[in-house]
Image 1: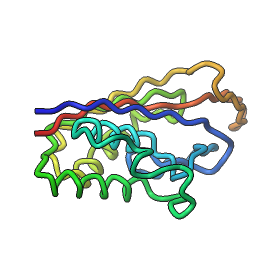
Image 2: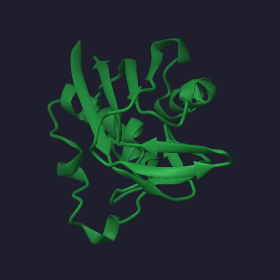
Image 3: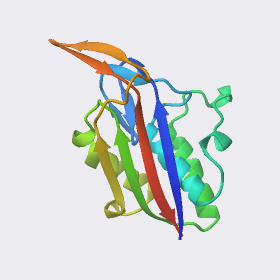
Length: 165
């Protein structure tokens, strides 16, 4: 068994929504990124690449490559999954941690787990998603008015551990 650790963080900006775990989530901001900015999938990719000693996300999908601008993170994950399969690796489990003030992923957690289960072809019982909904400091502070409320946002991040055999 091999174990990999992945981490991803991005700044957020005013926008119309984000994608997390392959699931579009409507909100008043978006993620600054070369791809679709799905930090959950990016962290998962890095964990899988690390477990197989293949390198990291930037090795396979460099942000300087304009031909992959706005690429779907699920497409990137599919490429990595195909490489793992070619080399006879099998994913055993995925342990995800999302850290961010918003969105509150508790309402999206099962949908994300179900989606990742389908994409990775592993049982949902082997995918864990913890949400830590907290401010991350002054990395990228923006304010968004929503009704009578003003929300202050900072960066969001995701960390993943996975094992393969």
